[in-house]
Amino acid sequence: MLKVLLFGNLGSGKSHLAERFIQRHPIYEHVAIDAFRRTHGDGTMAGERTAKECFILSVLPGMPQLIEATGLGETGVLLAERLDAMEEHMLIVLLTTPLERCLTRLEQRIWDVPYPAPPEEALELARRTDAFIKAGEVEMIWDRAGRTQLIKGDCSDERSMNELLERMEHHLLK
Image 1 (cartoon, rainbow, N blue to C red):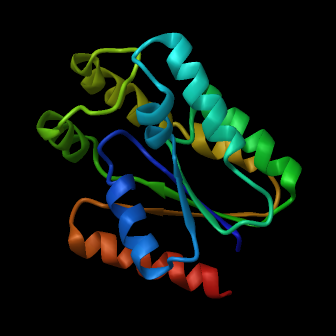
Image 2 (cartoon, helix red, strand yellow):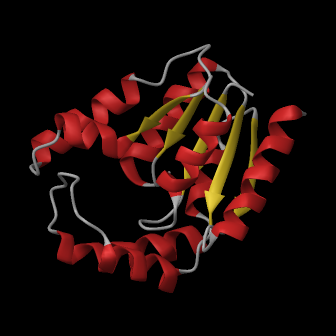
Image 3 (spheres, rainbow, N blue to C red):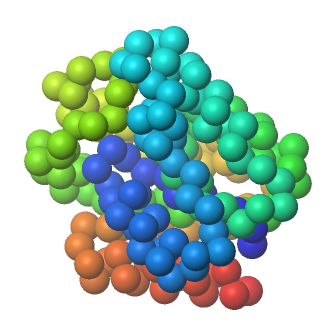
């Protein structure tokens, strides 16, 4: 597997899981939409478009990359199209952390990512994203891409995160 795609709701534990994975597998480059928002975004829609474009273009063929985003919306579709054209094998990891845990984390978060919506709207966005994930929207986008394996897991606590890391590593060794 060259690509690991880490998707999930706001506050689901994507960044923390990504850090843990990269520590264990330093050959992987961490490509996260929020890093591009910090670098290229300015809180406007134009800045968001620039951040998304740079994020999508940073996904390169033949490179071991862990790619972190929600996996939904325009960014998810553009990412799926780019990866499908590369014809690489992908492990898709969908975080299913319960909404209440995500909301608690969001209420405690320090908002340092420029985004074209105020932080106060993040809780409602998380509720909508949770509904999309539960409705299978991530699978609908990514089922079209070939050469994928999907696993789901919860990152509510250290134990569940460790279990998910082990499952990810098991799939990578296949």
